[in-house]
Image (cartoon, rainbow, N blue to C red; front, top):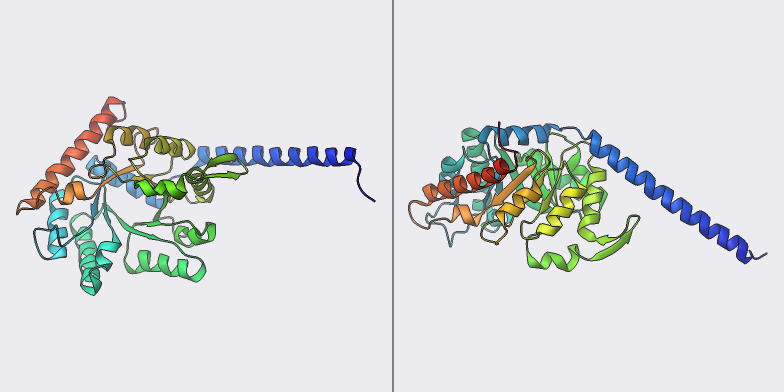
Length: 316
């Protein structure tokens, strides 16, 4: 027997009611999670590193032999670290630059990590790997980055969904920054694409941020959001009010620093890492490269702190 029009209408209304109840429940759960978010071992260490240096500066260690004024990658990194250790809260070696140099590059990375541990033991070291895979592969990547290399935090690609992220989140003392909205122009090709989910129409990067907020049960998750896209940064911070944000794109990529700080920090003026790579490490191509890097790092720190002070969110 076929259902009549009246039955079909009642079923349609019932489906709509179920949909909206599910939507309301999801919003309530997310709001509750925002209020109850606790500090993880990683976020406590990140905050301590920032408070010690009174700095939100993260220096990207991206060695390019064509631009380095010395031939040794490790000696270059060592000089940069020695000159800037008291000015930053984090260093971020991009693994691609070391992998491109073969085994010697990986050995230089190993020595760089060890040196940072000796001279700046409280500073966070972020392995900028942007790894992304599923199942045993994701578990192997997490083991390699955290247990073998010993990074405090990593960047990953969550294109494979929740099960590609979960292995990285198991240890709450380790941070995981998901690439959410890039600083490069091509990020708009996919990350700005409009999708439809239970919340309605939205760009993919917003859906990614909302999913990460839901997955972040241990409080050790963060997002990568470019300084070159201030409106997207504003929207993501609103969706994830407490989550640490790693913000590249200031300096050589042209992102506006004042906007990045104001839109990227949390309500206390913390939980953000303003990254600069080329603008600091290649501030000079002469023998004074380390001193020039220190000047640029200090200038960046002071500029950030001026914005925080102006907004009543300076350091104690």
